[in-house]
Image (tube, rainbow, N blue to C red; front, side):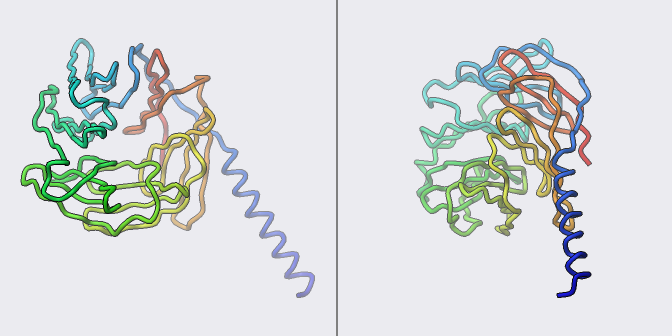
Length: 271
């Protein structure tokens, strides 16, 4: 190879490396919106009507101004997971008893599902609200993602068996996202189409915004990652005035930071 092509390759390498480093060193600033004091063990987020949800002493709570609702079920043990995607059908998952409670918008019980009593053997380790009276269900017995119609009591497997254990998952009406123990990121839609979305960095917590964007925390720092259509990536550190954060939640470009005593909301610009 002549000297000129070598120099061109070297310059391209330098330019590409600089682009990646530059993107990763960029900062994303926030605009303060509001903050409120809170007495909670876990903050769960807001719904589209502006109600906030949290858990205190294993009691599920919903608040807005002077409005206050709560639900507790001592017989089912600890609340493992919640889904407030549909505020008219809220999902509470009690993994120790392989059961789910569905609540209405005033936290009255709509129905209780005990998967141990189902005709098909199901041991649930991941769950979320889907479409048309269905729940996303990950059955650890066959390691497959399924849809469960809680009105018809019908169970339908949609994915092939997963090869690695789920480390993190998140659902919306049409998609089941998960990250495995090797930090591989996947999605499965309601028709069973599974897509490999890439690899995520080593992280503590994550909030998936889309198949190409997510916010994650590591060592008390917060980052936003944007995967471009050409396959390149940009990583931005989110500048936070808080010195510590228990949890973060992002909805409609409002980033909520939960600390032991308060929730602070910021406007974040996400392209």
